[in-house]
Length: 363
Ligand code: DAH
Image (cartoon, rainbow, N blue to C red):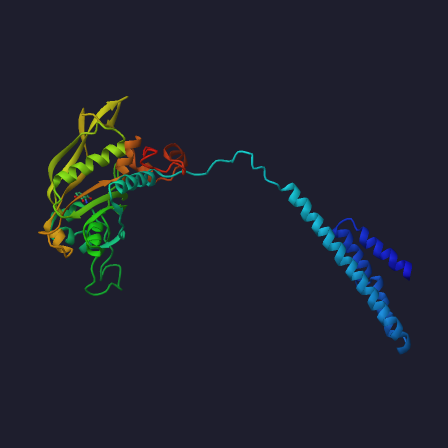
């Protein structure tokens, strides 16, 4: 028995890998294993024999179990060592592959705008895309009967009696905001002037062709302070457009216009010139409209609970997609929202291309 035990322990100690060790375990401690068989002989012994053999066989079983556990730990440690040795990382290799995907031009332009206006002391404000009638129209001096409402091709939510039987009696009518101008109202209501904000975001109108999509992006600007006049507006727009288009030869033309929420109102044209058969911003071969703007109407200031004799301001609004098209030379707005990977690879920006004024907002 003693030499059999020595053999068993020697085989366990020499097991080359975990499967070999498992085979040894089964041979010793499995149902038919040598030690299990020995344990079974205890039943047939006299009490005196058992008193001698019992502790001996149990000690033997313990010795074998300990030997198996020790060998198992050693083999597992060896496996781990080997894995660690093969999984080293060569820190001197170049990082590859490069980053996947790209930043959409709309996101890029919004980041550029935020960067430019942050430098002028403006912060970014937001508002909901599902708006109510009052914020989108009434508070902006567009009463119910105003013809400007018809111009907006608004997506309205159903009212009581239409599709939505749960619509609360007397509740305000909801809609998808048709412009970012309601953020002016929400900001004036939520915060005390002076206010210097921009509000980029999605807007919705029921309209679709090469230059219109049912969802598009606008950016709103609002300044409310004391003693603000149109000179401040013109300087701000000029500074912004020069930084955005990265040219000093930007010429602006303010054309008298009409918006219900500003008085006086001006449409802003920017001079363009021809370069390789393309219209590019800068120079003065012709004019194209880029912005709507004006001095915030006293009715709007009053609707937000402020005194228009104390607070004045200017506002402006423009299409972010349109700015992107002008700057980066795309000509079909619908391609912005097709999700075509070839288009995104061509016009997209690297995620590392973060616009900064020092590094250039050009992308
Ligand atoms: N909300 C206008 C639109 O969607 C754009 C606009 C024009 C915004 C003049 C303004 C503004 O803040 O002063 O067409």
